[in-house]
Amino acid sequence: MTPIENDFLPINGTDYIELYVGNSKQAAHYYKTAFGFQDLAYAGLETGLKDRESYVLVQDKIRLVLTSPLKSGTEVGQHIDKHGDGVKVVALWVDDARKSYDETIKRGAKSFLEPVVEKDENGQVVKAGIYTYGETVHLFIERKDYNGTFLPGFKKWESAYHPSPIGLKYVDHMVGNVGWGEMNTWVDFYGKVLGFSQLVSFDDKDISTEYTALMSKVMSNGNGRIKFPINEPAEGKKKSQVEEYLDFYEGAGVQHIAVATDNIVETVTALRNRGVDFLRVPETYYDGLLDRVGEIEEDLAPLKELGILVDRDDEGYLLQIFTKPVEPRPTMFFEIIERKGARSFGKGNFKALFEAIEREQEIRGTL
Image 1 (cartoon, rainbow, N blue to C red):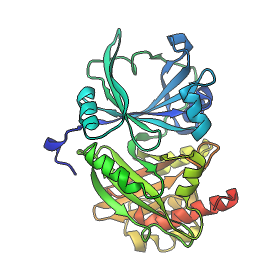
Image 2: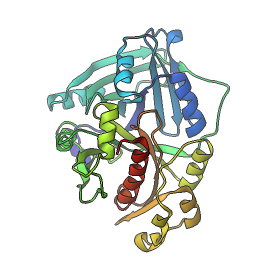
Image 3: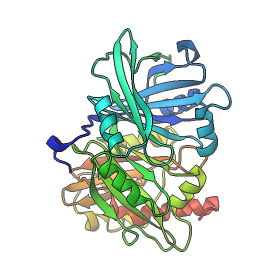
Image 4: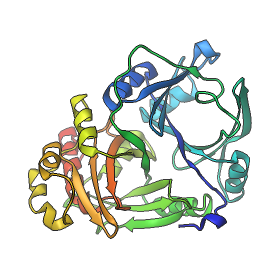
């Protein structure tokens, strides 16, 4: 990792993730009901916006912004028309948005938003932004002089419907899918432009099945709070999950959002009870699991019943599971992860996981 004292782009964490969606009101209801998010803020016609509306949801340190267009021909609507529902903004919480912008622009970033100060009665926020892969953007959010609910232009949102949270804590990592031969371009971008360093890499020998393959490198910022694995397809007998994503998203974009929990069995049980569908590995995955990963604190029976995967690295182990895509196109999904010391990403589960994805692709007719 980059030594903290030499970090020209210090990042405190993920500020929020903004998804452009076809129906923000209904999407907000889904993420509240299924994922246990809570009301936070709203912006739309009632707050002076004419072209879009946004609902902001929160659960512990995770903030989701769900944005929809209010008329045809808008930038938001055109993004949805091309890509379907998906992540547009990965906002990064910084102490100095102008400096973050200047440091990245001078290193070659393409500008999305020049530094702007937004104010209301609760103070001011400085925002600036750059493009990353595809049409995805990073906004730098400086909020040290702000004590409002979310951002200027938003009002507090309170409905009468409050499903309970399910134990989601923070964004662990976010994975981007990029096109053929583009992974190293974006690895270099995060290295040179944002000062990230490479944690780990996987090639097609690590991540392959009989039919499909992909390559992946994980980039992390100086303090390790931001981790961005970047995938590209590799040659295989049939179409890989990354190719399928690129075809249906019509370009590079965020493949999945990994969210952390302190009790994956409770969290996944709640998600399943609320209607979230998960990928399933064959039950044979659990034969000899403890021989592969060693002793774990959890009882194996509920892990097997829920389909939760386990992997170990030099520093501990992790438990993880992946939802099916949460929109019509087979694009974005969520990972639920509980870390018990491990800092890795479940390399030992890739083959079983990708075979499960291939079974879904076969059903969709896209393998």
